Length: 510
Image 1 (cartoon, rainbow, N blue to C red):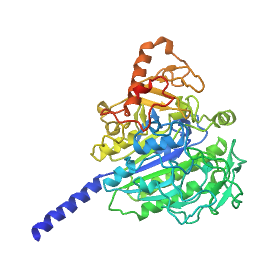
Image 2: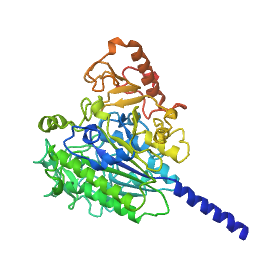
Image 3: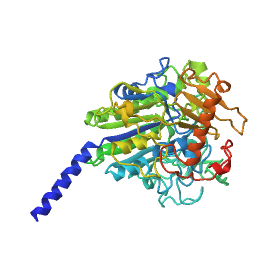
Image 4: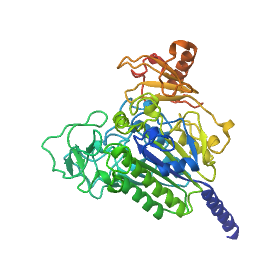
């Protein structure tokens, strides 16, 4: 019996050591925050973001970091799976609240990967990847559990909302149920303090006489399902409070993975009273200041509980700023897109170049930078590298580990081409300083080439002067698109056959 006990204790001891070595991982994700909406990235910013500035000062800034798309759903897919969303059935736009989840059951996610390695996993915030609710609008059975949602994708705990506030089914879901279900209905109400904005706030109504049906991606026109206790301005506070509460109650013997996707500064722009009028950029600037304050609350908790040193904090935004940015620039001289061209939905840099910070004091040098293009999808391979495990062939096909850069081994950091994708389905490819923007069939936009090292604002199309670069980039775009992966390895088929936005390719090439 003694001979059995000693090895068993040694295994327990080794397991405890391994758990202690693994970093906690906290992913904070904002919604529609532009590159210029962080004060350390924008010297002319009309508001300060001390918490985000602190992440940059105490960690690594990726100055050329990109979201997986230029709108919500596809970027969230890539962040969690390390795979471009245009490889799935979603070829443009976003989902509504109610539709089959874009992440299929056997697809590895950041949550399932870390859970396999002994992590406690939690998601608190906005999901926007599809959920399955029992019944139809007007005839729901809210006693039935929600299916095909975060708890089915590797998360052990979920508190949050299904999608953006304008898509409905708004309630404070915890696990598979909402303690106060969305049994009432509402429509957007005017928001008097922000540019071209709306509110989701009482009074709410009973069911209408007639309902429209959702379209193929789960969006619809008509009344929004809402819970009696739901109020749009409470999202940031609720999500932060719930995160802190979960951190306090978690199993402290295990490392944690927390995904915290905020709803700001996406519309509705509704800063709480203590931030009203505090910025020089109207309600939007106030809202960003509130967002930063909540992030600071999380960072303070890590400090106070001696968790900061071995917690990897990853911060980014799902796309560039909403199209209110030109008016905000005009009224307040604040450029949410920084020096970059356009904003949300656009294939140009302002649509997908976003704030991107990683702080991990135990491993990452304070104030460091990486200036080559990376994507949010790279987080999956990075975490796998940290955990010293290889991704399976059918996971993270577009994910490149950033661990060498993070730990100062710059000469070992691999840089592969990056594919950009506009919300209308338009493609671009980036390799080193070159960016080839493909024409769009819908609007008949012309093919364009930019050298971002010399022209980061994409003002001078030099396609006629560099036909060899165009040929090279087009071949790479075709290879990455048709093979189903960016990284080396066997082909991994896309989820669909050829689609019309691949107009430069023959159907047999996909």
